[in-house]
Amino acid sequence: MTNSLTPDDLLRAPKVLLHDHLDGGVRPRTVVELAAEHGYPSLPTTDVDALSGWFYDAANSGSLERYLETFAHTVGVMQTPEALARVASECAQDLAADGVVYAEVRYAPELHVAEGMELPAVVEAVNEGFREGQKLAEAAGTPIRVGALLTAMRHAARSMEIAELAVRYRDDGVVGFDIAGAEAGFPPTRHLDAFEYLQRENAHFTIHAGEGFGLPSIWQAIQWCGADRLGHGVRIIDDITVGADGEARLGLLAAYVRDKRIPLEMAPTSNVMTGAVRSIEEHPIGLLRRLSFRVTINTDNRLMSGTSMTKEFVQLADAFGWGLDDFRWFTINAMKSAFIPFDQRLALIDGVIKPGYAALQA
Ligand SMILES: [Zn+2]
Image (cartoon, rainbow, N blue to C red; front, side, top):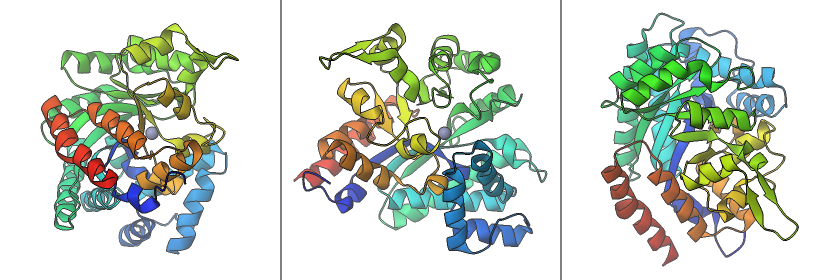
């Protein structure tokens, strides 16, 4: 790492996380314990270390089927209110211990009804878990605020129902909506009614777009569906050309994304693992930061990618020579892009993030 920045500095630096999946960040030990409690028979191994390695290898295999299989196991053990609350509480505690001061964590309620829970019960269990985790984090001296994003699966047909759920719980733990799942063949416009409903309700939403699929997906998410943010959005790079003189030329869509300050929720390790990008060094986040796009740094799936916000920061510091000024810029970008009210975002920027970086830089 350059400029005498240590991993410990980056651990202590305040962080804001906008793109993290609840079922992608379960502690391996918790997966094993919940499987035993609930009689879930399908885990590849019940040895915690071996399971942890199995998740990483399967996610890193380059096979989409194996990657998706990993989620079958985490979701498989998250089918009761108690299990969901435990996972949500541990999520809040783990993020807080990683220096995250504000997080929006997403999950798909429709994936947690296999054993008979109703959708509202799923949301209430997760909310309860986040509240509990926040309390424990506060007691541990690492306060964090966590809000939920409700995700609808793009290959399914429940997006309207999930959007209504997000509006119903908007003042109670839920801050927004998202769609996720295989991008190719399932364009965001398939769920246009849900997005139009959310716009009429003055509600916020992000859309996974430009990760596994290119510019048309990003264009639809913004110009047809009205997304406030883009999940990943890495392929926006396809609309930017850099000449031999180093001068960047933006196409109309890339220019629109930058002009409108549309936040890009990038997750470097995840983007490499899913093949959206070849390596951290080649990740477009370097160019996009230079061009002052509204880029943010995220974990996506901490368990499958074996990552954390601190690890993402450390890797980016190594790859691009970034220092505290850069990470402060990314963190303020992310806080500005959060779905909580403006005055609350500002309070975190002025009261927590800026003083936190100032203390590290002193
Ligand atoms: Zn994601």
